Image 1 (tube, rainbow, N blue to C red):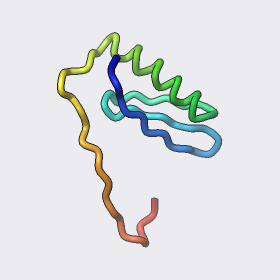
Image 2 (image 1 turned 180 degrees about the horizontal axis):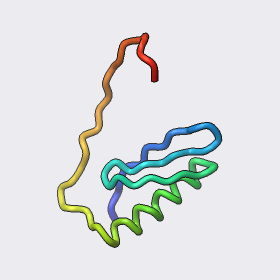
Image 3 (image 1 turned 135 degrees about the vertical axis):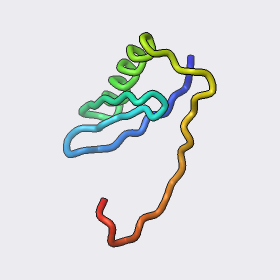
Length: 70
């Protein structure tokens, strides 16, 4: 088993889930469904393109000016 990261964002009426280590993405009507779909998509992707050892993204935060639009 390998632990990967999931980033989940709500967009209108769906949740979009992405895995930054692999670049896979999926969606669902609930957080749980989006995560389950991401897991399935990532497992299928990794069957074809295995992860290289030591490959971990650096995750951090940053600030933008208050007048900036998101």
